[in-house]
Structures are given as C-alpha cells and as structure tokens.
Amino acid sequence: MALLLIIALFLLLCYALLMLLYFTGLMIMKDEGQEDWHPQQEVSLVIPFRNEVKHLHGIIADLLAQDYPAHLLSVLLVNDHSTDGSREVVRSITEKLGHFALLDLPAGKSGKKEAIAFALSKISSSWVMQTDADCRVGPGFISSHMSHQVLHSSDLVAGMVSTGQARGGFLEAFERLDLLALNACGAGSFAVERPIM
Image 1: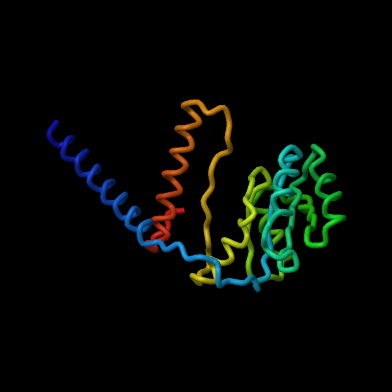
Image 2 (image 1 turned 90 degrees about the horizontal axis):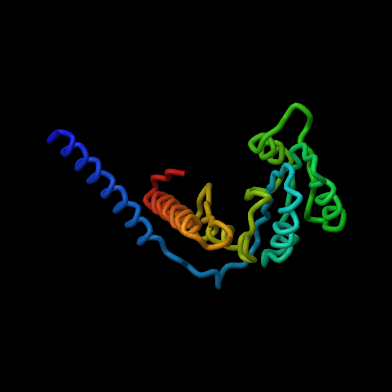
C-alpha cells in the first residue's frame, strides 16, 4: 500500500511540474500588436470537406469578412466526394469569387489527409493555412496568424479553437473548460519549444 502511495505521489508531482512548465510557457508568451505590420505575404487556405452543406455557408461568410487583402489570399475548398450538394454550393460561390477555388479529390483518394496533400500539390504560395468546413473564424483569423509568423519567424503557427455556443448545460461547460485546458497546455508547450500537439 505504501508503495502505491509513493508511486501516486510521484506521478502527481511529475504532472504538477509539467503543468508548471506549460504555465511558465504561457506567461513568457508575448502578445505583440499588429500596428506596425502590413500584409505582404501570399497565403493559401485549404478547407477539405465532405458532406458539409449545412456548414459551408458559415465558413465562407467568415472568409469573405476577413481583414486580410483578398489579392494575397487564395482559398482552396477540396471536395472529398460529397453526396449532399456541398460541391454545388462551393461551385456556385467559386464561380463568383476569383480567390476561391474548388478542387475535387480524384477517384481512389479519400479522407482529410489526402485532401490536404492534394491541395498542397496545387499551391504555389509559401504559406499555407488549414481549417475545417465546420469551423467558424473571426475576421482577423488569417491576419493574426500571418502577423504572428512575421513577428516570430517560424515554420508552424498554431491557433486556439473553441466549441460553439449551445444550450449551456453542465456538459457543455465541462467540454469548453476541457478544451481550454488542452489549448493552454498546447500553447505553453509551444512557448517552451516542446510542442505536444
């Protein structure tokens, strides 16, 4: 029994030290403003989708509201063999907007990873971002990621995610708190150059 208690206390101590390390990483992160930053980098945004007809209008509206210059942005929506009319929704939008493009994943390929890899083979810009069709993004989504990359030169910039608003019960609050803790651990681990995600 004493051995189990010692092992449990040791694991608890290791966990507490790890959380302290991540917390320290969060504290050393600097929130540098974008006031002196002006977008100059071309960026491509890849959005794979399969049967997302009910979500596509939301993400596309969010992307049209971005504060990043449209001439520096290309949005590639990759259809992963949708059967619910998603492709037609995207096609009608891409016909009207020059910086939006529809790509169809070839036969024999399927899944999110294949869709991203296929889009990457079509991209010429130096910077690529990716999000999902069922996500919603704020107007500074692209500019905040790109300004951070310029101010803190890196090969990868990761952003936080959150759940959408629902009924607001205990389980939703628990899920949001759990996701926030995961985001904080991820951000802290990036800051101490030991990414866990």
